[in-house]
Image 1 (tube, protein in one colour):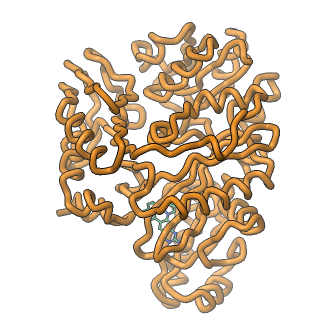
Image 2 (cartoon, protein in one colour):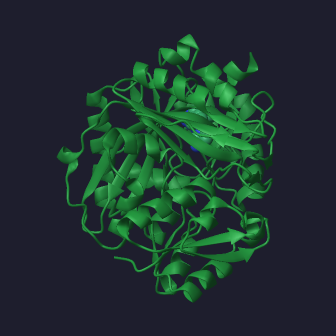
Length: 445
Ligand code: MV4
């Protein structure tokens, strides 16, 4: 097992990783920017190192500073959390070149899945269903038009280096193709320094469903079921559920087997998430994430597993020690992402938290680095906490969520708690009847 783990992140996920380390008996090193000197992840770590000024580029993305911090503290492994350097293959390589372990997949797999075309090509060859589309990159408008003619409109032109919706353009007809193609190309060049694009049939009312996978270095791969992440606004998820209200146990088993079989053949290790669009009873793979995800707790709650502990164990070379048959799904879990934002305008609301009271009780989990007196800095993501509830079924989970949201007091800054309270009272939400477009319409009315 590792002697000491450096956590290359901040906020709630840094605490989440520290908690797993502490239970495994592994000391932790926190890194922080000057803006985070008073942060909870620094206070609770065994050691901490200041790695730079507030902008993430100069601190949490500063590879040289992070590697130096690991080296001077004698850390033998680095956990990247999510965001920041978590899906940076070059960083993972550098960690390994310095004789430390990157707690995550191999750099080659991170790189493969970072290229959405390579990811789709690999998944297709491993038997995973895709959205109909171009066979690889589309080099010019003529080819784009040929693809449009073949698969039918509307289509979506997507950036190979994309994700998060940037560099994505719809063409509703052949007439719109030239503009969509050129704009997608130039936006992806500007955003990612890569102008490769591909084309897919545009699905107009899908759900976003993702499968949680775990693999050891010995070739064992299991899944922990799906999450429904359809409730998002501008590609920011607000609320996630496990399992999906739209998926039967049989569909879960079938999709899980498709995903695990593919990753077994690929020789993948550590955690991973396969993202699918689900519409008209069909699943279509779109992307794979090679990191621990923000919404991992809903999966942990229904499976009774500590995914961060599992990440650390398999990164240290331990075998899973259980099989798919040992994984039992229990009840329903919902996560609300609470952000320091105005619940109506979504403008960030950094500032001082003057009073703080977190809900508790049966089936309630809070993953947050907030405390009374904490100043939410303006430099980073606005998520300040996650409220996760678990109950025997979805209706009871919603009731528990209502109760927990009422109890939650974050004073001094505006948060999205009132928005979550509104969402869960909506009859369509309560019926589980929503697609990826539902929330945009809900906040607009
Ligand atoms: C799509 C799609 C419809 N059809 N692909 C958005 C971000 C990127 N990860 C994939 N995205 C989409 N791909 C096809 N062929 C609709 C979206 C999409 C979306 C997907 C998941 C969650 C929220 C979304 C919001 C808008 C569009």
